[in-house]
Image (cartoon, rainbow, N blue to C red; front, side, top):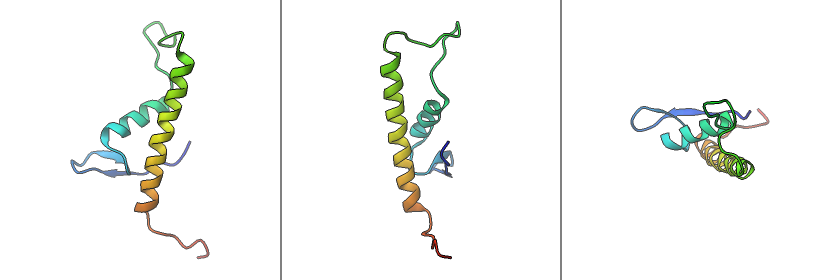
Length: 81
């Protein structure tokens, strides 16, 4: 698991730095794994693999957006200190 850094958005909601509240919710939902339906089987059937790959791709997009914003937001650190 990668480190996550939160801040408050303009409405005071806890969001990942660089993401909107919707993107934060989506990221956290994707991170939890596949959806389970009422009979405890994986939701959907034939296209499970395609959806899983799409979810991983979207998670990576959101994480990259967050990481880029974090690098710009966080203070520059001297690694020699």
